[in-house]
Structure formats: C-alpha cells, structure tokens
Image (cartoon, rainbow, N blue to C red; front, side):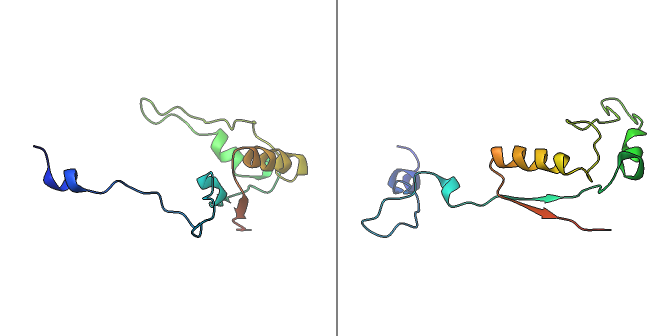
Length: 103
C-alpha cells in the first residue's frame, strides 16, 4: 500500500516570478547573481604572503605541501594578472568580486 502521505502528496510545481500569462524564465541563472570574496596579496611575490605559503611543509600523511597556485605565484600589482582572473571568473558564471581590503 505504501506511505499514505506520500501517495496523496501533490506533485511539486516549480516556483516562478512570472505573472499569469507570462513565460517563466528558462534558467535559474537568469535570477541568480553570483559574487565571490577575494583576498588579494597586493604586491610582488617577494613582499606578499606567497613566501610563507612556499615554505609550507608536509605535516602528516596525505598533507601535500606546499600548494602551488594554478597560474603560479604572480604579482597582483600587474593589471594583466587581475584581468586574467576576472575573465576566468566571468567565463564561469561569476558576476561580481567583493574585495577584502586589509592593508
């Protein structure tokens, strides 16, 4: 016989912001804005936190250190470095950066 509450439950209907008679948005992405927090180093590798990260040592089995950034250690004072990050983020659905300004 099954679960009576499950047998009688109505089918789920997706919610939409469309008014009656209007077409619903095709994608959820049309309604969602994605932002990311960004913690920059703001400077040449020799003057940033990268030096500390480069010195990391493995502490236990499976703890692979040091980690190396995908694009390597780069100078974030160089506009081309940030442009590459902005382009990559935009290509992957990021709409905004929220910068942590801690200096």
